[in-house]
Amino acid sequence: MTILPLLSVPFPTSLVISLVMGGIFVGCFSFAVFKRLLGVLQQEHYKGGAFLKWYFRRGNITRQRAELLTLSLVLLVALFNVCFSFLGYKGANLVALAPFFFLFLFYYLTEEKYALKVKTAVTPRLVRLTVCEFLLNIAFATGLCFGMYALAAWADFNWLYLLRFVPLALVPLATPVTLVLAAALCKVYEIPRAKHFVKKARKALAQSPCVKVGITGSFGKTSVKNFAATILAEKFRVIATPASYNTPLGIARTVNEGGLDCDVFLAEMGARHVGDIRELCDMVKPSYGVVTGVCGQHLETFGSIENIYREKGVLAQTCKCVVLGERAAGMKEGDGVLLSGRDFAAENIELHPDGTQFDLRIGTVAVPVKTKLLGRHCAEDIALAAALCSALGMSVGEIAGGIERIAPVEHRLQRIEGANGVIVLDDAYNSNVEGARCALEVLRLFEGGKYVVTPGLVELGEMEEQVNAALGKNLVGLNVVLVGETLVRAVHNGYKAAGGDEGMLVTVPTLAKAQEYLAEHLQAGDCVLFLNDLPDIY
Image 1 (spheres, rainbow, N blue to C red):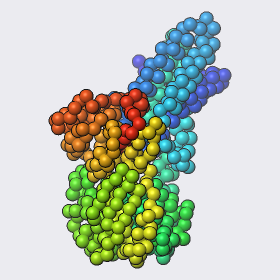
Image 2 (image 1 turned 120 degrees about the horizontal axis):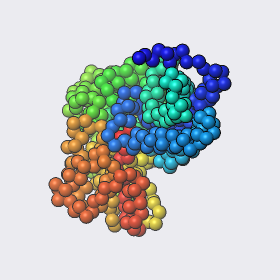
Image 3 (image 1 turned 135 degrees about the horizontal axis):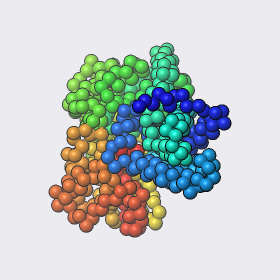
Image 4 (image 1 turned 180 degrees about the vertical axis):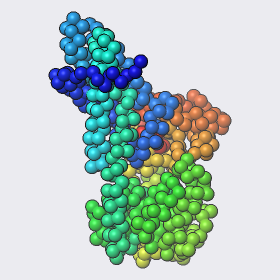
């Protein structure tokens, strides 16, 4: 037996129209499924392999919901076809499209209640990808319609005619694959376009007389960049890459859309793989640099802590002057001049619930400094920024004036006066080992009940279990709310091994459930620390 006769099945014009319309109908409504997936794919930098690894991981609720949607569609579409078979298979097929409309609509509305933590950026690239995904899903759905009709005609089996729209229920399951395929197809256009975009920015950077500064490290990059930008503004015209724009495309967007009418350009440089910093240095060609510190962050993609040190050291080898943080101890000196701890420091640090005081020393000159920022690490970050500003020609007095204007960075141990007299410490942005230690130190300064909400620390590779167990030990004595199931077992084990009171620890499945728990237990004067908020790709 062969399926080649399927290719010779006649398709009348009216039938072709109805099959195509059915495919378009279901393909368009598949947006309810892939809208969320678009945002996750964007967070994975449009890398299909990483996206599929996330989607098919064990216990992924998004995949489970899509499977439930498919099962519901199969049962309801089949039921509608059988119940309305008295209308003939064409009439029954038309009525059977109703479950697609209502279930996709219900799915979409329920998905909207659980917005992505990282808001999807509606960029031209995302729009192009969305159009391509629409077309692929429509083509897939239409192909299913034609295939089922051809199979029914070939087998001459009436039940297959009646149930020809049932296979369309497979669209939700196929959507992740078609989305990855759409991303791959779009890369035929996106990669050359991105190269041109970066090349344009590289040319503008090379022609600009402004001083270029690169800022990298396992943590604190954005904070140091923002602090330096604020201080430098006392004397210079400054442009800094916004938010966490720390990739070639992010820097290119800053340059191409905003220009380089400035005295100093601050470029945050992120890295997840060996070679990333070299690519950014070749693009920006910084003459000054800052390495904030090195830890096991992104160990999962770097493979070893030595690779992380080596990668961050590329900036030191590129610049004529690099400011090296104390937390980068162990990095080998490159060809650049290193401003080490003896050249600048944050000394006599005093932590308070409403801010931090310390003596800023640059060379032999020291000045007292007070800031609204919280945590021991913020003093180190300010000292790093101050050392850079000093190297660029600012006096200690000018630097101290700029420090007074530094505002807290959103989601980085930011103090928020919550409702009903509750104080919130928002340290939800990509917390790391050092930052977590400092955040917990600040939390213990407050009176009243002290609560920690955390899903654990991520991107630590083989160190993940060890580090999260250590985090658990540091939580002893606090009220702890563990969120999710990704890393909390190691945190819980560390807490228990250190003698923590399990009556003060609770595990909840989602952040929403954690908020419900807090609403029931928090009282005026209590303080709650949100320590790390896992991105949607975890």
